[in-house]
Length: 355
Ligand SMILES: [Zn+2]
Image (cartoon, rainbow, N blue to C red; front, side, top):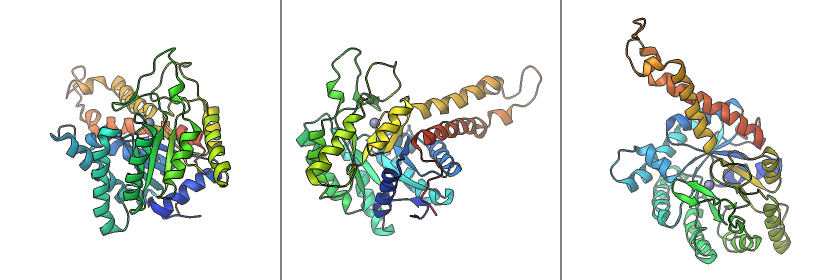
C-alpha cells in the first residue's frame, strides 16, 4: 500500500487509518500553533519515516493568524486556512503523509467549524480536495441526542468534500483552550467514562453518512496531573468495539478510536488502547513543555544575549546568539526529540505509507 506524500484526505485518509488499525500502530496528532511547531512535526515525521497528524485548536489557529488580530473569530478561521495552505504546500516535500485536523469545538465553536468547512468547499472546487482531512466536534456537554444530531448535520456537509468527522462521547477530563472539564480529586468520576451503548448509537446514525472517528473517554485527561487521580480503563474501548461488532456483524475493531490526553500516559496503557482500535493519539502538553525546555536551556547558556547586544563582560557582539533563528531552532530541536519518543510509543516509526 503506497500513498502520495502530502496531505491525505478521502479514500487515502481511510487507507491510512485502516493501515494503522491493521498494523497495530497509531499516529501522533500534534497540536501546533505556528510554523515552528508545524515544521518541527514534519521534520520529526520525515526523520523517522512516520506519518503524522498536524492539528490545531481554535486558540492555535487564532495564534497562527496573529494574537494581535482584532477580530478573534476571523483570526480563528483565517489562521486555520493559512495553516492548512502552509502544510499543503510543504508536506509533500518532507516526503510523508500528513493528516490535517482541528481539535475540540464545543457548541459555541460550531460557527468556527462551519466557516472552515465553507473555506474547504471553495478550496475543493479549485483543487479537488478539502483544506482539512477532518474536524472535531466536541458536543459531549450536550445531551447524547443533541450531540449526535449536530454531528450528523456536520458530517452530511463534510462527506461531500471527502472529509472525516471526529466526535466525542463521554468526557475527557482536564481543560484545553477553555474547552473541557475540571478534575476534582476524590470526586465521582463515572462521567469520565464513555458508555458503549452511546457509541453504538453514534455508529448507527453516522456510519451511513460518512467516515467518522470517536474520541471515547476511558479515564484519559488533558494535561499532566499527579498520578492516581483518574484510572485509565482501556477495556471500555474494547467493550464499545465488541458491542458494535456483535450488533452489526462487522469485522474486528469496526470503530476508529482516538486517544485524547495522551501526554504522560503509561506506555502499557497506550499499547493496550492501540490494540482496541485507537489510530490517533493526541499530544500537546508534552510537546509544549519540550518547546519551552529547549528555549529555557538556550537562555541558561546564553543569558547575556537576552539582555545586551554587546556582552558587558568581554565586549563581544551577541547577535549570533539572540538571532531568533538560534533559540527558536533550539525549541524545534527539543520538540522533534520529544516526538521521536511519541512515535516510538505509538509504533509508527518506519511505517509511512508515502512512496
Ligand atoms: Zn482533547
